[in-house]
Length: 577
Image (cartoon, rainbow, N blue to C red; front, side, top):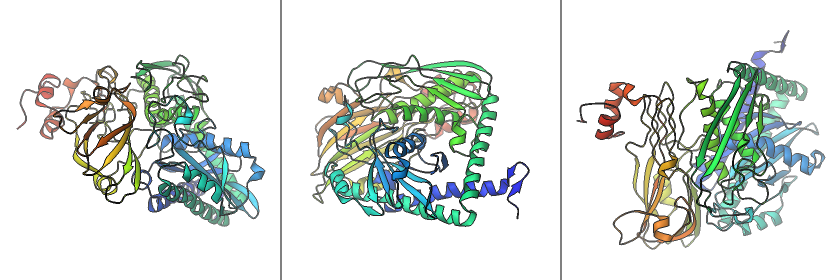
């Protein structure tokens, strides 16, 4: 069978090669979930797997975390250029988590392995994963009151963790000595490194099948194809400049709103996304790295364009980003940024989508909850005597679209992760879940309703003492997820505590005097104390009185909306049965 056509390589061959790249990345992910130690990997899937060619172009990815996937473009290039491409040998693995070297935020640890074929460097395989505990001032390494990167955990420049398939144990020991849960670090890093070996093996098999020259050519044609398709999608958007703004309630250190501003310019077949006008970088850790901001832009554009475009470097070429250094969207050393990936990214992505709402009304959605509801905790397990630490993120409501309701209880769009099941939660940690439910009326009202947020109530188990930290947004009533085209706002997030002997939940500011009600570090709770964690709902789309009556009745019967909302907001006269 010929591999050539008049236009280039046979489309069937290109499809097979593209699917092979995607499946290699998926197999890397399976390796991660089966071998990692921490729930954030084997349950939450907070990692991403990618392939690069020798010129450092991304040639393959799978359905993992959009924030990590986009950042990997900058991480891999920065790493290889800093170390020098000639410094890589077969069997090497480079580790890197520096947010100022193209990274996302400091918990994201990237491992990169070269792939050689017949003695020649052909490309690289990479894995970016969120290690659940990397030291720093806060248990779980999310210091919500951090004012510099040194408080956020151990920062590692590009170093060779493995040389010619031999672990550099002095580096392994150094890293584990600075993490609170070294056993988990050992297991999770080995899972990441193991996924690279699987990817290398599969890529070599593909090179055996097609040869390096043909596979290189196929990669380049796939990238050109993705670029043409993306340019065609952009060309279908009316030319012009479209603006949008949003705010965050505080930075965790100073109780003042943080202003975000974007201008999206469509110029023929290219997009320019300009963040000029956004606030200067703040003292607290909600600053975003350039990689995080770029990832938010790419994430948004992929949401409003054809989903079948192959996701490789070609798809990113028509998108240009202006993120002024020293602002919230391009943090400079030594500014903190651990919350930029989880709290700021989803708002930036929603803003780009919101800006395009006036010209793409049938492709955009209202605001999602746009907070990961980061809840961190650690302590000594009363049954095992071992120290534990965990990073937990909570799914919230997504925004409604012109043609459908928003998703309920779904992790923010920058994550694409999963919730940790209650059974795993209670098996691993001394926390008892008293309630895990959807929050009535939390979805923004509209012709299409926003997705619902969740409520989780956790009690500290008998004999336990736990140190908790949190980093959320959208808890202030003035900062709810916005609706579109007359749709209502989504419900707020919340994190509250009820100490033994108290009858009601109170904010951590009311109870412990924290500077922020949604962002705090290292609060000690004891057996019998309870924590309430609410995730926000998504914004609604359209006039709620235009909602299909059958849908309103169904929502009412299922407890998604209250009698009062059905009557006063949606205009339904009858009550629930």
